[in-house]
Structures are given as structure tokens and as C-alpha cells.
Amino acid sequence: MNGLHDFQPSVWQAIWANPADASTEQAPWAHEPGFAVYRNTVLRGCVDALVALYPAVHRLTGDDWFRALALRHARVHPPRDACLATYGAELPDLLAQALPQDQWPWLPEVARLDQLWAESLVASDAPSLSAEALVPLAGADLRWRPHPATRWHWHRQWPLWHLWRAAREGWPDPNPPRWRGEGVLFTRPGHEVLATPIGPGAAALLCACATGTTLPEAVAAALAAEPGLDLTACMGLLLAQGAFHANPTETTP
Image (cartoon, rainbow, N blue to C red):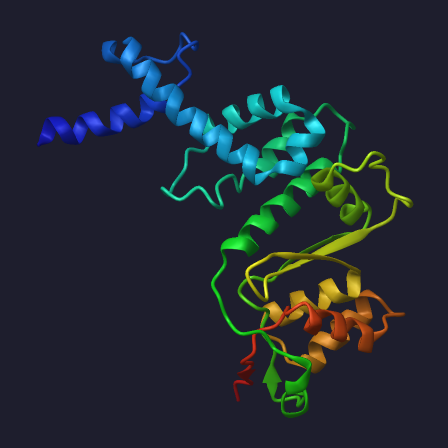
């Protein structure tokens, strides 16, 4: 048993080690052709998973460049779970390090949108709050909660909605009409992830609700982030997209 206990970690380390790195000491069996096939199969699975999870980045950077980055990611950050549906959480940060200086500085933010889309897809199911339920839930003594599948990201500088959508859908002209801050909301009220553009007010409101603030406090945060916000339109959009959990929580005395 002790031999197996020691052997398993050495196999795990050999899988992720770069065989071309002469400074990495490996056991003799790690150089066998059979093990090389096994290692390459595992690494290919991780790379293919990242290609599927980050389609916008893959399209923008090209297959060869992205696969090289994905392989680098897999060696540094092996999967921690057999399910690869949300693998690659560190890839946006790695992407920021790998890009040449001042080249596509917005690309890591686009990668975060790919990541959030995948998280929304596999999040827990729950009923969504509907507009019809607003009357009994509009008091100051309740806290609205984002739906488990709700994700959002807003950036004050980059037009993330247009950049991400153009890459995902393969637009002929991916250039945004205006280079100004944009955000994206991901929801899954049914079986399909919905992507919707949002501004700083909606993002601030969702962030406040996620921290457990009351609805009036969340509204105040939204108006502070976007003074000209049309609050009615904003709340209508969030409710229509199923952004909130159907059951708010009571305020703690």
C-alpha cells in the first residue's frame, strides 16, 4: 500500500511536467512511449475543454496560439475536479500575462465573459422573481438575492458586450460602434443562458444585492454608479431576464 501511495502522486506530477524541460527530474517510466500517450491524452482533454469554454478568445487569438496558451494553463493549473464544465478559472489572468504589452488589453475581460457564461450554464436551478410578485416584495425589510445562475460583469473602459458578442457570433466587422464602457448580464431562467447588455447602474445594483443589502440600499448604489439611470427600466430588464431569486430573505434585526 505504501508503494501505491507514493506512486500515485508521482504519476500525477509526471502528467503535468513538461518532458522537454531538462531541469525536471522524472522517473524512468515517465519516458516510456505508453505513458507519453496517456499524458498527451490527458493534456489534450484539458486543452479541448478550454477551447470549448472560451470560444470568443479562441476565435480572436486563433487556434494555434490559444492551444499553446491552454497547454501552458493545464500544466500550471491541472483540473481539481473530474467535471471540466467550469475549468480554467485562472485563464483570464494567464491571458493578461501572455499578451504582448499594450496588445488587446481588453481580451482578458472578454475571457471573463466566456467564463461567466459557462458558470451560468451549470449553476443550480431555482425559481426566478417575476414582476407580478413585486407588490409584496417591495418593502425595505427584504433583501433581494441574485438567482444562482445570474452572472454579470461591467468595465468602465471597454465595450465588452460588443467585443464578446462579435467574437462569439463571428461578426464580419467586430469593431464596436463606440469605445466606451459596457457590461453583460448572464441569466438562465430556463434551460438556455441569456446574455443582455447592462450599464454601471444595473451592475452596481446586482453587486449590492449579492452582498446582502436591502433593496433601497441596492437602489441607492445603482443611482450612485449611474446618476441618470432609469430605475424603472433597469428593474424591468433585470426582472424580465430572471436575474433575481424568487424568494428574498428577511432583514436580520
